[in-house]
Image: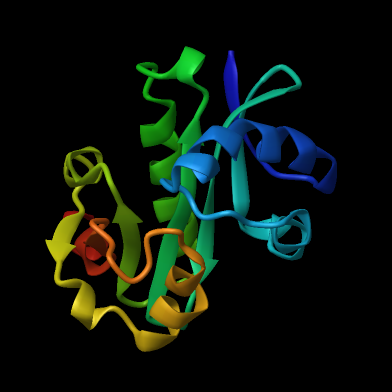
Length: 160
């Protein structure tokens, strides 16, 4: 049974191993073990027993903006809605933390996020500090075909 849990420092080696292929391909940004450790509280893991089979992170940029980062699911576990459950978990976490406006995602798989209520936006509206802090580290920078999408948190209030 797959369980969603907050990451611990002892999970970092499995996390790094799981994402290695996507980092090499340039579909996920490389984050050093120290970067992951510094942000360990941001990560939620999908675990099958003690095995990390997926993870993502909710990174807070400001009171108004958060970002879902590094969404990955082990190839052998895809098709089981694990990614969807992790995204829903991070959206609930953003609401609990009272992020005021948007949750951003940059992705090569926009359809996945659109099915979860995200809407595509022009990358030029993304705060500059986001672009320079992360995108400059990408092997595809400055020519990138990632798609930017946002989830409007005010939607929850309308759905209640």
